[in-house]
Length: 446
Image (cartoon, rainbow, N blue to C red):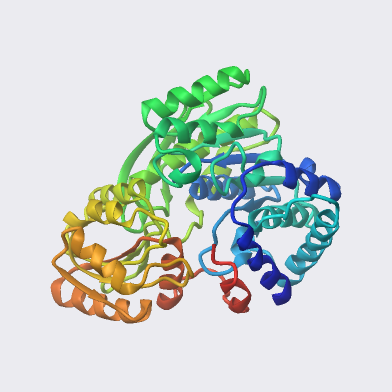
């Protein structure tokens, strides 16, 4: 399998090439496995993965076999492909990869055929995997944007658009309205779309796109009422009600006020999907929401002292982290460990976090596009943090930050990149799945 992933990693040289022509030709050669799926399709700047995880967990609790395709992965490529809540096993991934690679080579042998990109290959693997596993219900997260994303060849039961902010501006546009228009490209004729909390200007763009497609647009905040009775770093206890049901208090193991809007979007999407024939009793919501697993998102990954790991990598995500610190009543001084990919607006991100931070360490992540530790340390100083150091690695930064936090009754926050979040979870022993064969996956940090 390593050789396949080596060849796949080399396809990064083709870059990102938004468009649906190549992926359409590829799945046609594979026998259109995507047409066998009933899909909840999710786009947005932040919150896509949480909504996918919440929906999947409830559907599994209802007894349905469910698949989930998300990106990127924290540690292992297998995370991108969850079958009934578990990362795909090596043998099945290898079989799907082999089938896709054969189709790619045949396609590219045709005259004037474009090279198939890295993400197109990974997406085709998802469709083939789910067919091989005999799973017909899937949560699909877009990789970039929506309109021209490789996942956008599906006809969903329901589409979901989560919070929209400024990210990937070189590809999607530099205004919220432009980005919203790209995300709204996942809306299909006559298929309902759930809209999560977002700026009014983005909501207006999505509502207009839905109207053009004769698609019902459901405002998650109007459809779902959530009251928080308790909020801690370990999660929050929620009272959820809709027109269809009033659920008993549920402890959802996702911390941070920003997760409330993701819960609203997931519940609204599930209730909309239920109108298509899915049976979802109250017990499934209670069991599924209370057992959801979505690591690296404001996760309490260790205690004594508390270590919070979050993959936020854009200014909107940084604002969510600041809000989560406040909603969880974190009043202790914060030691920050930060690392970023070079294509992110790291300085804007750090300026949002800086008022809450007492000291910080800059590190490089395991991604080849990472800023160096010294570059990140320089940005930390520019953001207004006075006590800053560089660390040679994540483990060394954790050792230093935890020692400082113990001495100062503080907490440690790891933030800036999903790749950094994965590195930290492994170092802390908090990664929830096996990490064998990681060499294959280091090639796929993208």
